[in-house]
Length: 487
Image: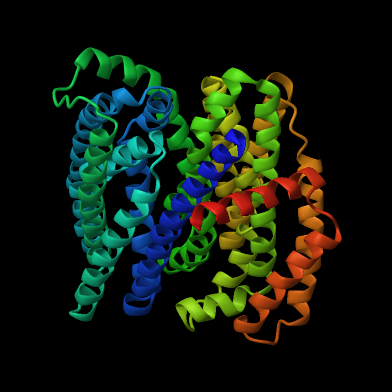
């Protein structure tokens, strides 16, 4: 029963984080659609480049403290406020330095006017974004992820409402980044309130003064995670930053339209993995064989979700682009059909990375990610110069596959044997069969294609016995246990 309780807790926390991530990424996609429809492809290109820089810096402002405090709080909740205060102090200092660097960059280079104002707004937003990420990590450490869903929803609605009003009044690209500021500030306030409530429930002593010696020691431990986050985000964002050197801003906007749809999963997956990090850390220290089995099941679960998504998007890319962005973005269709497959490799690689983190092999992970980023940049430049947007799309897929090969090889040699082929072949076969159903229905609307394909996929999962008897029994027990708790 304890094992069922633990699994239920994992599923509930994952569901909460999944919902919050869907809201956040869905909000980002809505912003992209609004910019594309109100301001056009060139402005969308400016938005894409500035957003890529903003996201890279936002990821760096917590200086890798998320994984450190999630792991530490999961082991000792009595220290949650200590870790929150110290990590927030370090994050605030880092964000101020990054903001100053952005302002200096604008002063020295003098970019186009619409980009300049957007960068100033990003610089003002960085402290709030970094502090929000730290607050999220604290709640993840105490496994209270449901609070993030509320914070994300309220912040998102506030930001989108402001953006719509500004665009209706004729505002430029900067308004999209001001809406992000509102989103981060509102979410931070709500998350901080929930942290204090959790601290009271756990009877944690309130300590508000940072311990600078602890800040320093935690910072040194967090450096590999900061580098890893930068490298992981770089693999997703650097191609956008490099693109203006290879193609026009309007073409950058077309490429970004496809990438925004693809990155819906690239945001969800690491959050789901961070949800499981406390469990991975505990299971690795207690029972490595059980930890390897858990990683295999998580990998299989992710692939079951990712494969049909990739097939359906590939088949319906033209309808999806037209529905979301309207006419004029047809060049985004082949890009979307290619880059969506990078998420299959990204999903599998996220499991490998969490195994490396849980077993204290993050330094090796950083070195591999550095190598992967170098390869990604090289592929982007070479293939982008040769084939433009399509070449960059191919580079994204090849780079993600290369990094998975590196990390999976290390995990298999030194940590645990996880059979990628065994985990992937049945979900792939079922998704391929469902994809053929989608091809047959391609002339129908998405309202018909999506539910019929989903039903066919479930049928093929059952037909090909994608899950073992033990897994089906576990799912049945989980369902009965959840129903009993809800009733």
